[in-house]
Amino acid sequence: MTDVIDLPLSTKSDGAKSGGEAHRPRIIAVANQKGGVGKTTTTINLATALAAVNQRVLIVDLDPQGNASTGLGLRPSEREISSYDVLINGNTLEEARKETSIPRLSIVPSGMDLSGAEIELVDFERRETQLKESLGKLPHDVDYVLIDCPPSLGLLTLNALVASDAVLVPLQCEFFALEGVSHLVRTIKRVKKAFNPNLEIQGIVLTMYDKRNNLSAQVANDVRDYFGDVVYRTVIPRNVRVSEAPSHGAPVLVYDMKCPGSRAYLNLASEVLKREGVKA
Image 1 (cartoon, rainbow, N blue to C red):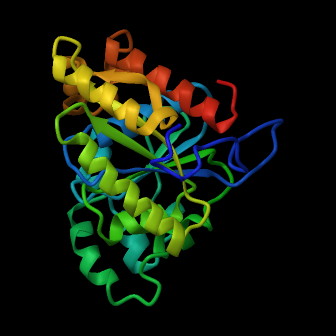
Image 2: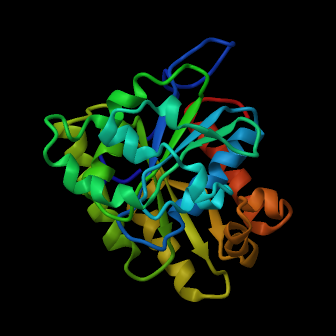
């Protein structure tokens, strides 16, 4: 690994499950302040892949757009208690939690009311730890919590980073990608210093890779040169089936398990578990 990042790369932690022991969930924020990088797509498909290998997964949808909730087939009328209520109104994650059609996968949904949470949290005494405190009360029937962060570095993302053990960064293979993720890494280091000394980078995953495009290969090479072993070997290809799946309210692993995008997310889950010290 290069010395550009001095955050530790994720290794086996107390959140990893072994020998049937009960541990607290391992919490991973899926974050990138840039929109359109495949963040939500990565969250729901990685969660589905982890559930497919018998990990019990909870998604916390912290994006006001609520795309993770929609992408798992949850209608707005089914989001009576949302992540907004958890952060602002004192509801528990267990009260907000909804089971999905995928075994071992549940979600705390989001809605448009969450867009006002950034402003409301400013007046809270412990505004950056609201989510951490809620996650501390979560029952031990979850192995992994994946937090789908909004495309910004405001108080919602700060809550996710303070609450998390690690960060997974989706990175689109485009010209300005390196500049954007470098800014995010600086933010992660500040959060590590000020609020969460145990925060680490789980990894950076290259998304929307087009093998027909020389720019994709160039960006991938630049990112690997810059970040070294932090970057997963798995690359998520630009794939029509991945783009179609959300409109059907299903992860691509359910929509078309044999497509290249599905195979890539299964490989990514294997890499994540390997870094966590868990055998898939």
